[in-house]
Image 1: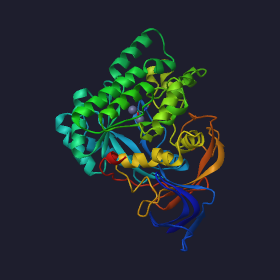
Image 2: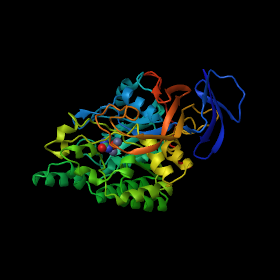
Image 3: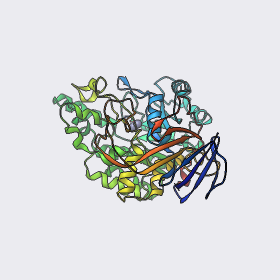
Image 4: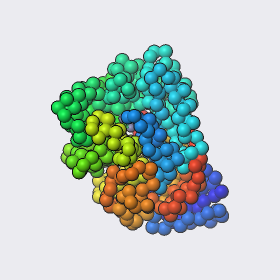
Amino acid sequence: MSVLIRNGRVVTAVDDYFGDVFVDGEVVALIGRELVIDADTVIDASGKLVLPGGVDPHTHLELPFGGTTTSDTFETGTRAAAHGGTTCIIDFAVQSRGMSTLEALDIWHAKAAGKTAVDYAFHMIITDLPPRRIPEMRRLADDGVTSYKLFMAYPGVMLSDDGTIFRALRKAGEDGTLVCMHAENGIVIDELVRIALEEGEIGPKQHALTRPTRLEAEGVHRALAIAEVARSPIYIVHLSCYDALQELRLAQARGVMAHAETCPQYLLLDVGAYDAPGFDGAKYVLTPPLREEWNQDELWRALRLKTLDVISTDHCPFCLKEQKELGRSDFSKIPNGGPGIENRMSLIYHHGVSEGRFDLNRFVELTSTGAARIFGLFPKKGTIAVGSDADIVIFDPEREETISVHNPRTHHMNVDYSAYEGFRVKGYTETVLSRGKVVIDRGEYVGRPGDGAFVRRGPYGGIHA
Ligand code: URP
Ligand code: ZN
Ligand code: ZN
C-alpha cells in the first residue's frame, strides 16, 4: 500500500517546508515538491501541518497499582493515543518483588501483543535488584528494553535504596542504557502522610500537602548526585516544580548527563484543583501532585531553554467512581494517577505554540523527537525523513475543540472524567498514519487492534539530543 500526502506544511524538529510526502509500505520513501507518482491513497494536506507522530514515553496501561488496575487497556489506551496524534508509546512493565525482570517483560508482552492501535515499547520498572539480578539489565537491553525506572518513593512497594540506585546507574552507564528516576523522598513523605492521618486529615488535598516540592527537589538532587558519581546519564520523570528544576540546572551545569520530562498536568493545572467540591479533588491525585500555579511559568521557560527535554503524559487513569473511591476516607489510598494520553498534542500546541512560548520545531522536539532520541527510537520514530517509519500526523491548526469527557471527538480514553474538562484548544489531530497505515481518518478510527507492534529500542541516544 502507498500513500501520498500532498501540499502539507511538513514540520520536524529542524525542518519547516511545504511539500509532498510519499509513503511506500511502512516507511517514508520520497519527499519533494509536486511529486508526480501513483499512490493507492492520496491525502490533501493543504492548510494542514504534517508532523512526525507523537512519542509519549510515559504511560501506564493495564497497570496494577494502588489496589486496582489502570482503566485503559493496551487496546483502549493506544486507540485514544492515536486519536490525539501519538503514534508510539513507551509503557512501563513492572517487576514484582522476587520476580525476574525477564519474566515481568513476558507478562507485559502478553498484555499488549496484538492489541494496540499504534506501536509501543517498554521500560522496565525495577523493584528488586540484588547483585545476582544485575546481568538481567543487559538481557533486557538485548530484547529492546533499553531503559528502566527506579523509585525513590513508595517505601515497601517500589522504593529502591541508594545502593541499589547506584548499582543500576553504573550498569546502565556501562551498557549504554538509561535509568529513569521517580525522584521524591518517599521515606519522609510517608511520615507526613502518617501525621496527616493521625490528625484526621483525610481529604484529597492532603496528597499535595504531604508531598512538598522540597522533597521532590531532594530526590532529584540525590538522584543526580548518584548518577554523577556513577558516571551515567539519567532521566528524571514527571518533574513538577521550580525547586526540582533548580537542582536539574545545577547538575547540568556540572556536566551531568541529566535529562528530564514534565507533563501537561504540571504546565496547565495547579494545586487549586484539590479544592474541587466533594471528592472531586481525587481526580487530581497523581504523583508528584499539582503545584502552586507560579511553577508553571518556570516549567514553560525550562522547556523553551532546553533544560527540560520532553513532554510526556504519565497517563495513569483511574475512574473516579469505583477506583478513586478506594480512598474516600483515607487520601493515601486514592490510586495515584490521572489521564491524558489523548490530549497532549493539542494542549501543548495550543498553550506552547499558539500562545508563543516556543516555536513549531520545538513543539515537535518536545512531543516526539526528543523522546525518540533519548530512548533509542530515532530516526525510525520522531521525524519525517526518507527511511523513517511513516508515523505521520496531519494536524489542523485551525480546528477548535473543547476537551471534555462528554465530547466524543476529544475523549476516547476509558476513564469517567477528563483532567482538562472545559479546556478550549485550537489545533487538533485530523488524520494519523501508523507505519504507513491510516488509523485515524479525519477524526474517525479506522484501524484495528494489532496494527501496532512492539518496537525494540536501541541504546540511549541522548548524548545527541
Ligand atoms: O501518579 C502517578 N504518576 N502514577 C503513576 C506512577 C508513577 O509514579 O509514575
Ligand atoms: Zn513515577
Ligand atoms: Zn508514571
